[in-house]
Length: 216
Image (cartoon, rainbow, N blue to C red; front, top):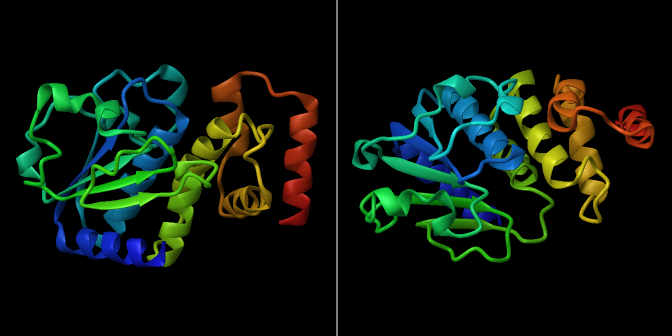
């Protein structure tokens, strides 16, 4: 994975204008990852846009700059495309609008955790053992020495909370608890994530998060 991270970092360093794409019918993991890229890569002076072919559900409006997500674009205006959490290239649905978008004219970083992924990117960072794409992205940000701000931490927590069923699914390993605790230490707003994504959170889940905080 370290070699893939290095390849992706080099592509990002070379690009000046970057497009961060979420999959269709967006959920917390794809939007959290796209938002984290959007905020994080601005630290390197990159001009970056977020895109999704579908409307962003209101419950994700707490993520930074969700009102800036675009639907249409000229993909050749960008030096690099990053696709987050799309289990296959067709999951973005942009191939229906722009048939050549993944044909190699613009390099693509494919960042995902689904075993169904068809490795459509120039660089494919795919780890089916990862609980969420945002868990992978946390590790990538650490690799790149990018600062995780409270807004980025909240975006990453959004993806983790979404894809682990509020830390209740079997994919919630020790690494997920450790990363979640670190993100909360960095200012990630779990209370907002829980309220917006699931409206109400079981007492057992709140106690579980409390133990994470105590041990972080």
